[in-house]
Image: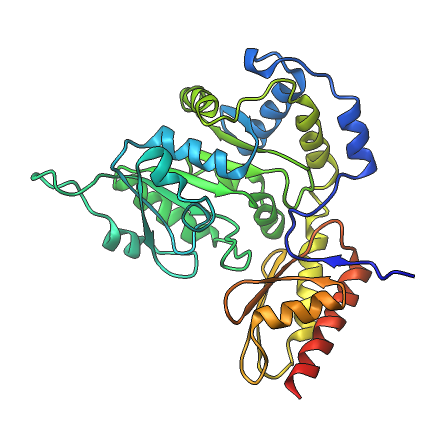
Length: 348
């Protein structure tokens, strides 16, 4: 019998469940360009309410949601301040510069920063007009390159307050905000409250096949709708996609805690290995670093693939894996044992 592949490369690899497929098949649809798709409208209302915002816009991807926010809050030539390793800087194909004429300036290290670090980085406009305005401050929660790390609420609120004092607009890349809220045991709206705009993703831990939303004030979302059209993200009968998101929010939200538990269990299995430094996961992303004599991340990834465990190299000597709803507890346990065996054999 062929061994099943355990795919831990990302939580984006999930496939729609039977219930989600049924919701997609039965979705009521209309033309969203005319604002007439009832399922899209319902999804937008649901997500805006959950995040405590006045309005929301359904878009194809998290990258588009972030880029719409950047475009709405800035002018070409502005500086945007963001965390070290931010998704908008590393994984959005240079869109901030190409589409909005922005420069991205990083603050802090490891995905987080303090109010003091923000004040040190912030450049006020000079009377000689030589420095670009710092109009927008971006956060990411959970932080992808930080291993799914979660902003401590007090620190987040302090930094957000500092940004306000500096006159900046605030945007949250909340692609995995749901994970942060579940891990902290807090309402989504509490994590979203400090920000003018928030992007959230449906196609990661929640398991929908497509879609993100940008949430914020009515006037900002009105402008974002025009830019969505400009960027090629306007859709017609998008209710078939929105239905998957509504199903995911109703059926897959609370179970995110299981993914967090599975990531911690894999970390536990690997934690005592020599030459392996496991970064304790805070949500569903696990990172571990390899020291000599172990081979590099690419080689370890290749050896695991031969055993039907898919993970991702995340640097020369760092490996990343992400737990999700398509990999249950037994599969995660099996993956952990195969990873452990590969690393033990490689150390001999």
